[in-house]
Length: 530
Image (cartoon, rainbow, N blue to C red; front, top):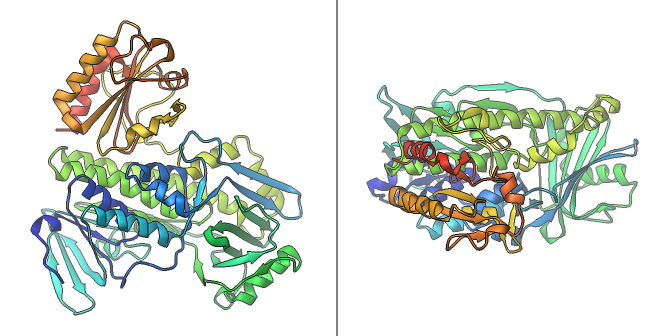
């Protein structure tokens, strides 16, 4: 095992999958060295996850890799739930989302990991493959002790990282060694089988995800690049392990399409059990992210996306604290925010599971779910991640008057400012963002003074951008973006007056207020950025 400087051992990441790779990449982007180990012999060649949702793409865009994913993946506009024999179809349309990525991206998890690994390497990071965590513990003072082994030569190391992040999957060694309990449950029809294979003659759109829902079976078709489909089957088979042959999957297609659709040679096939569970996210200086912390039904393709969002939330906070630029208390916000997000996801996937895969449940009961008012809109916002909010885990900044509408903890909506500029493009940097929505023709000098004040106090840790309304072009300060409509100003509470919106590095709102209330806003930021 190669020698590593002490600096690299300050943070140990166990697992080089999507969550671990993203966490390591963000840390290195902040200039924080970390060590990444994985017991596998190298990068995965096959994958379970194959859908990246809009919110995940927004976060990956901050690292300038979202467009690389899009170029290698396949866009899908909608999720269609076909209730076989009833003539009813529930269509979940993603194209109207307020995002630069109003679609689902179908791409192999192996390809997603490859792009993350390339970005990590470009920042000087390496992954120690064939390196397994044997044990981890903490003492009464919170000191972490980790024992790792190089599986190639058997050499062991004892490490004392300041912090350790367990991104090591459903069967997490970190979680087990730390005694972090999992609150578990069960789903109906908990056996599933899947394959990636070419399919010909399929009478479904190659631009959508299609679920065929029958009383005792659900069959999912996900179009992937290179004319490959992910075929996933949930049924009441007693021996799913014997039903992952080409012939077995072809039999499913024959039942669905009466012999008119043909499955080509599978690239790979497997079966798996559905689990539901959620763990603590933190035990002292040890953190969990991704599947190590939660698992649930694959309905809605949420698992990898939830893990990526865990990693982003934790990594920017950990970077600031490690650099000495934020107090330890900032890390205390990780668990409540992401655990609540996971609980909402588990509940959402349970609803979808009951809709799609509760075999034996009468179709009438399932159809009643999609007919509930607001079901489609809530499902799209939830599945896409666009509806993710932390507003229930954060407190209003003292001294600020709530503006109504958006609140602290919400994801900042992405809107078009001009024909060539969307709001989220302003977030593609590591630090915090202060958006100044100018509406007052006489506020230019006050706005410039605020910009100077932010620069003096926080330097490059906060990027300030002025967005002037269309009627204030002449009064806009130098460097301001002049919006081509009033949409953004109305959405961010600046319909009649100037407002400030302070965003965390992940694009969630820290505070929203009028320009005259800048003092408490900046003081609250000063408590985050020491």
